[in-house]
Amino acid sequence: MSAIKRGVILGRFMPPHNGHRYLIDFGRHVADELTVFLCSLPRDPIPGELRLRWMKELFPSVRLVHVTEENPNANKAQPGAVRIWAAAITRSMLHGVDYVFASEHYGFDLSLELGAAFVPVDPSRSLFPVSASAVRAAPMTYWDYLPEPVRPYFVRRVCIAGNDVGQRVALGRALAEHFKTIFAGDYAAFWQEHVDREPTAADLPLLLRAQAASEGALARQAQRLLFVTTDPTQLALRWSVEHGEAADRLTAERQHGYDLYLALKAATPTGTGEQAGTDLLSRYVAMLPAQVRVASIPAPKPGDGHITATLEAACSAVEQLLKTSAQSP
Image (cartoon, rainbow, N blue to C red; front, side):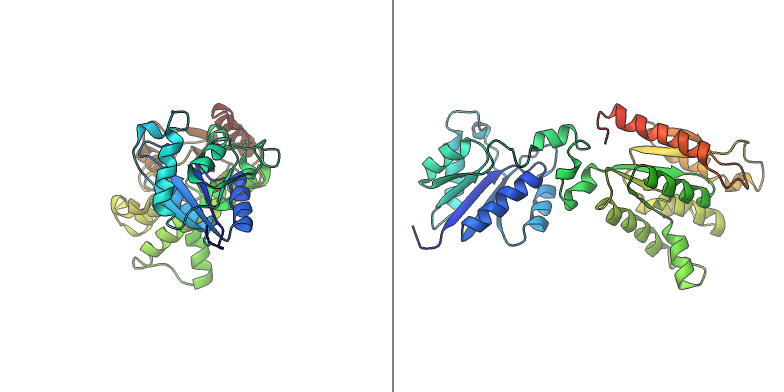
């Protein structure tokens, strides 16, 4: 072997967690060059390309090799599997392997096949009592072990829908405080306040994308839950009422959906005629797929600055979401 010590790590990283971070950082400090092999199959519950993006962001200085070979005999429990993995590693390691880093015993057998030294790293998982399978089964329980790039995939998103944006924002702020997380507000109102003019049709594509971007950015910092007080669809519907644009065209920037919708229902039905045209909530709910979870929440009465009853009903619905998902924070 050369004077440069080369190490390898093999795994699925589905998803990468802080135990993986320790393993890879440990390997980087021992080996002069570290190569991480990420193995994925099309049927994996978390797409391999997504995991690869996570790994690139988490470990920009580490050489990553994405292994996508479809080999039914490569399961770790199958006889001869270690030889298959060793062959895949050898094809990418032209100068040989000095160290195999692993937290599982298969690393020892793999090191023998590669003619390398086995370096066990926290095999008892006493430092990081977590596994990828445990994270997939109960991400809320293992939330603190999830790196920031991975969290948006598992965060529970709750969208607040209603005719009054002020009520939605007030409820979102209160829920975020109650569940010790953050909320995504109404970007169009923020934009108008700071640009100091009414938006035009030319501004709408930016506002739709910015609303979605705000949610995406905040999902990385949310603690288990993210409350959304205006999604692109509600923004588009509001625009269609105020400016006469077709809502179907404007909803192209719509998000993929939420785990729970809180519908702020007024105590009395919206009137007829011109008032009915402003009933955005009914139009919004009618656009939702039939299988989504929608909870009707009593909206505060007009002029009522207190949202205690609304907040209690909303908290109950959110807690039920977490309970039925068996993923209570």
